[in-house]
Length: 147
Image (cartoon, rainbow, N blue to C red; front, side, top):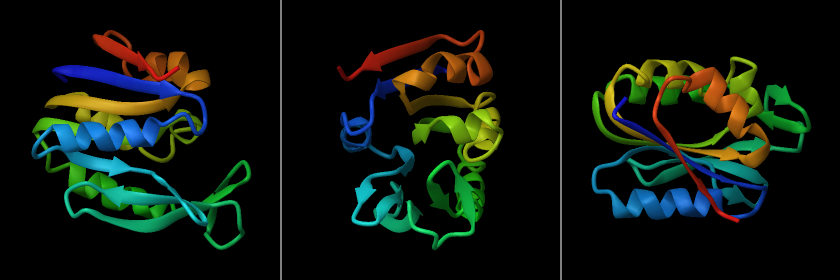
């Protein structure tokens, strides 16, 4: 990994909005952002400019962490797309408890560590130290706090 940049803040402080700004500033960046939607969160694919429902507090999806129901199989789509990326800038929004429990983006983060990429991830403040320790120990990491 060439560089790792963590965007951090609390809930609803603008992490996903900042990630969208970065995606718009960096041509040909790829990755996934999880903006708030009317039912919870969507999974927005930067490369196609499309979003799909992804996470909600309603019991409509098969997988669960805490109060959130989500679709773990969508992470396979993320892994498939990002496994083909060997250079450039990759953005991954909302790395946290799911990844610390080895779910979600965890396989993608391990895969990208060995690539010639600039990685930008968003992480809630309460998870920053644990995420750095688990996925980026020994890497040069810069942290951009929103508040």
